Image 1: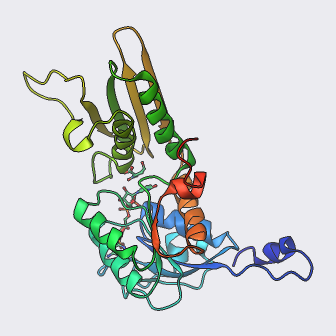
Image 2: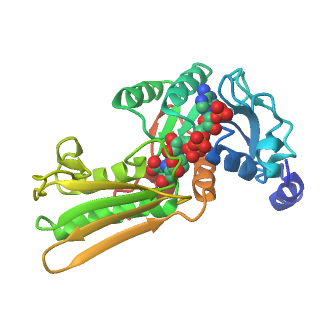
Image 3: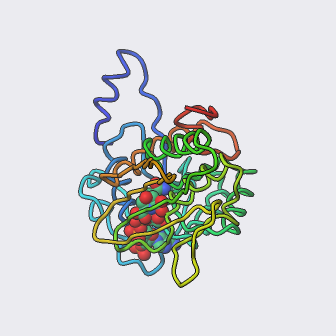
Length: 289
Ligand SMILES: NC(=O)C1=CN([C@@H]2O[C@H](COP(=O)(O)OP(=O)(O)OC[C@H]3O[C@@H](n4cnc5c(N)ncnc54)[C@H](OP(=O)(O)O)[C@@H]3O)[C@@H](O)[C@H]2O)C=CC1
Ligand SMILES: O=C(O)C1=N[C@H](C(=O)O)C[C@H](O)C1
């Protein structure tokens, strides 16, 4: 590991350094996957055992240093051959289909799951829920502290304002993002809907078009912008006829997602089988901030 010397020094004379948590990264060749490799290589509390890529990936067989130069010290090659024994936790930032496939295989081996992939269907979520009978599973639409705080605050603002405010969520992302609305925007809408006793299945309205699309009082509007290299912006708008509140989070670097997911992996490595969220990691599962 890159700073194992520093870790030994930190642990104090005579104290053995804690055993690093062994992780596999799925989606290792992706935008987030590469940052996961880079940050884990610099973390003496982690050991990367596998860097999973798709069958047919141009990265298959490459040393991980080719995917992220900061990970050149790791003696690991990207592989499409799946997991063997070794990792305690699988960290997945891939595609919905790959996520379900890799997670199912990992759970068979008793490996815990940290899932960052968005665009999962209800059926996909059902599969992951079932896997949590066997292994610890943590699914998060966003691993940043700020977004998880934003969701809580937005729920509290919605409760305090009550009815009478129009609510619209606007998200912006880079032009390579495949799913819309973002998982985070959906999570934000769910937090607001929960606070107001609304139901996203009925009250969420994605976009508006046409001659008769006047908003209804209960609807939560949702709008997705795709442009350039935006890492991830989310705003919840609350507006009456007289005043407006806008709660905004802007991610400035993908490292905020990668660092949050690695923190979650270390936390999950010590947990029993079950279903967990970032609330458990960041706020100890407390109901309010
Ligand atoms: N929860 C959060 O905080 C965040 C979630 N995300 C989500 O994470 C996901 C990935 O995002 P991003 O990194 O930008 O996307 P990318 O498209 O850059 O990366 C996804 C990677 O998955 C790989 N992949 C495809 N199939 C498989 C497979 N069977 N096994 C392993 N890897 C596979 C692909 O490449 P290859 O073919 O080379 O394997 C690709 O590199 C998205 O759903 C995104 O919305 C993104 C940011 C933050
Ligand atoms: O695809 C992305 O990039 C992101 N996806 C996540 C989402 O869908 O919410 C999180 C983040 O906003 C970046």
